[in-house]
Length: 107
View (tube, rainbow, N blue to C red):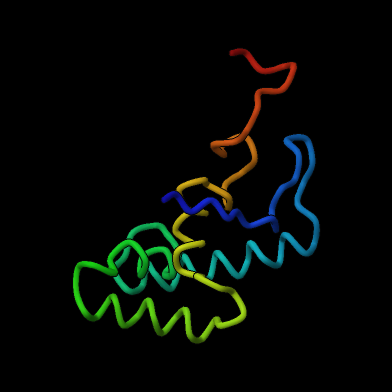
């Protein structure tokens, strides 16, 4: 079963800059990336890392449950974060997997 819930926070068209709400959300995500890097992780959110490593050890399984419990208002937060990383939701629009070339782009 493929989990396809996508975050709808950042969906600016290719020719627009993010809104203030999207900019604040990107700042929060940036801090999350930084926290994960300080914990000797790759360039991904801590929640995505917890989901990715949940089968590696009991520590990561516990951390995934803890993050999901703390963020109780966002069902399956870690799984959704992992899927957002795969879809590059937090990347610039032209780098996302669902980006479509504009009229001026060479294909």
